[in-house]
Length: 169
Image (cartoon, rainbow, N blue to C red; front, side, top):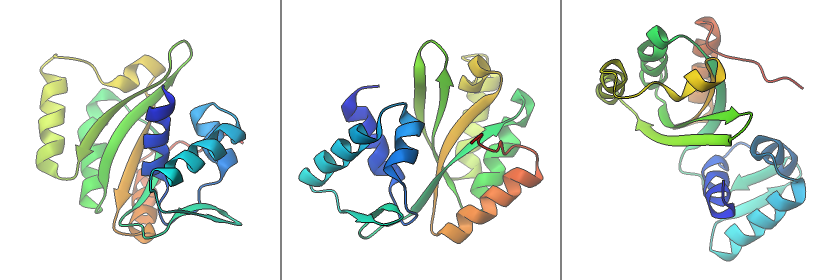
């Protein structure tokens, strides 16, 4: 991942929920200082990012976003996507952490059952396999929604269906 790609991803992750430099550093596999420099560059480019004692937040976030670590079978892809969009979420992307290649990501932009179904049909057609398959089913989604409360509801649904994977400390 290039610095520019990382800064774009950081910009998308900073919303109304505080994101610490240490937490972002762990997520991207870089040092805390690299994240601090990335945020400084984003600010220089005009990003409205505020530093608080709890982490970075967007000055006027339009949507809340959160990263969920999940795991499921190929047969459950549709169920996972429907669960998120039915609860009011938008699946912004999918990514995995590969032991050799590092972070591999792809934009998704799925915010309706129709778009979820189009994605699933492409996978079922055999054009390609889900990205999650290269990491034993483990993968991450950045999900955005109108509020943190909606994201909390999505998290609860992911847990209830057994898709949510708790992060190790």
